[in-house]
Image 1 (tube, rainbow, N blue to C red):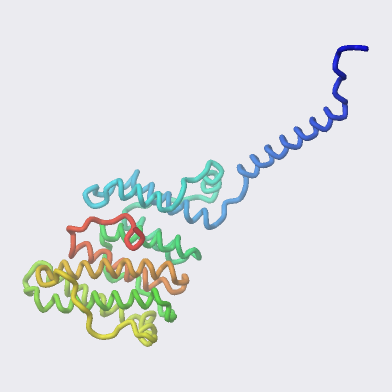
Image 2 (cartoon, rainbow, N blue to C red):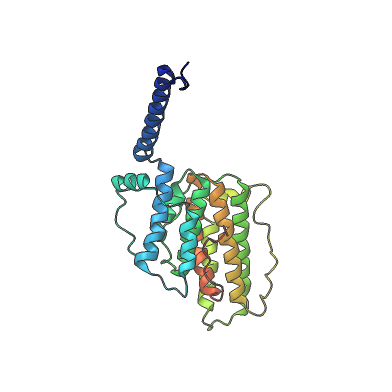
Length: 286
């Protein structure tokens, strides 16, 4: 009898070869899908926002004493991981348009995303970053009037109205304490007038009839008001900005116009009246 082991059956080899071929086909198919799979609108919006932040960092070079690179780095990371090679190809095919021409332009792009995104969390992140840039470089006032869409009694929106009303109350109280010829008197008067106009907007007035009402009369003045009334107004405006960002996350796109307009106004005025506090990366989110 021969001492050599028997040769493996030919059928076993054929089964193994077929199995290896199937594995190879699956690997190739997965690779092709990863390369050519379509880019969802949500991913495109997120990656577009990330690209806007990257462009601000690389091309606009904002004043590092106001917007240091670490803030911009955190803002870029807030929009999630960078595009994969496949996603980058799809984005290029869609056309990304010209990079932002200024910090105000970049903030306007993120505000547009915050206004229209069906994803509340993405909308709030975009609004938060836009608020940070508006604080660093306040845009001209008096633009982008809100529409007349009716608002529901959404708790986060009610909280935002309460915060705005408290800021107005503080500004009115500060006006009585700041000399008319002081450098900050005009800015505080402007805050009072702007907040008065905001709370009379057609989109806001229905909220005043909600139960419980968001405006209940007097408020407690913030700590430090007596020592520096203007700075105290800035602090209440920062609190209002945070409440507005939270309301963006909880609101439908149809209800965000007035929130974003108010956010733009409060973020810029807060930084003007309380410049000792640095601009944060994600107001209302960090």
